[in-house]
Amino acid sequence: MLFRNRPQAGRRLGDRLAHLSGQDVVVLGLPRGGVPVAAEVAALLGAPLDLCLVRKLGVPAQPELAMGAIGEDGVRVIDDTVAGRAGVPAHALARVEERERRELARRAVRYRGERPPVAVAGRTVVLVDDGVATGSTARAACRTVRARGAARIVLAVPVAPPDWTARLAGEADELISLETPAAFFAVGQFYDDFTQLDDDDVVACLRRARSGGSRTAVDREMAAAVGPVRLTGRLTVPADAAGIVVFAHGSGSGRHSPRNRFVAVGLNRAGLGTLLCDLLTEEEAADRTKVFDIGLLAARLTAVTARLRANPEAGNLPVGYFGASTGAAAALRAAAAPDAHVAAVVSRGGRPDLTSPALSSVTAPTLLVVGGADHQVLDLNRQAQTQLTCENHLTVVPGATHLFEEPGALEAVTDLARDWFTDHLPPAHV
Image (cartoon, rainbow, N blue to C red):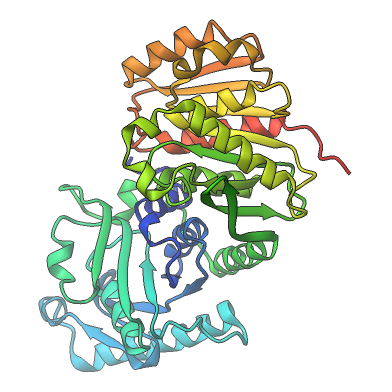
């Protein structure tokens, strides 16, 4: 199977769409199966979640075979080829359409109640379903949001047949599918759990998405001046957070990194705050000597942490560090300082060897996570682990390479980090 279930597929899809984060985006799920996929995408992008209501028009003798689809605002798509081959006369098609329009209206009331649809005019709309088969409902969805004034449409699904882009050419501005297997017969064949959903499932999913947003007490940009340099980060703190994890990223932007954002969303859901910060300016990040200047990165991480602790929105919460590559070395160097008071450290594909002299001074419980196919870094981590005297553990993610791009690899990292931090962050001071 390509996907365990719809939420897992949604998390993978959200990672693929992370470049849209920070833009004026709204995510619309196609009920019913597309909604739990869309919920994960919306959470990762920090975007509002709503529905795009469409209904398949099934051939009377074969209801699963789509001869067209309808959407809100009178949108209607008919596949004349399918209808003709199935011998569906005009009056039979009209009866099917009338029945499905009644169901469309019922679902609008059941799912939204008195709430109006989220406005899409002038915005980027990400349409999400659990997969594409014939493409009729996807086409109706695209035309519905286009009629409502969407500035840009991204149609994103976990799985679709190989020719899906040809079928839907011109309907969306961007078509994204994680997988396009050759032996495609039905969407459900690519899910281990493809349980059919009912109305209550959709309503519950929407309710969780809305309440999840209200539980976030803080979600904003945060700046810290370090000498002449101004560093920028994204601070997210759920209400009643157990602690805050500061992400240390040595190469490129830490706050825009799709991998960092993926892990951060998982930590936020577990009730942990996160600060995704850039330890280097954009100009500095292009200088490889600065990317490997662990002393510089650690000093800036320490300064950012001090600024965080002075912030009344987060000042009493225990702090942990999550670092990747050279950022992990910086996190360990900063945690080794006598007055660091760091509660726990997680290194993803890190280079702890680059801070070797300081490893024996680290007191924070430390988890080293390395990909099984990242052979050189794995050897370096094994050697570095022998110098750690604090509580520590080395976990190997089978088959993963340095960037953890393989299916399920980054999810494994997220689960490991979540468990390590929730187990080792002490209660907040009051």
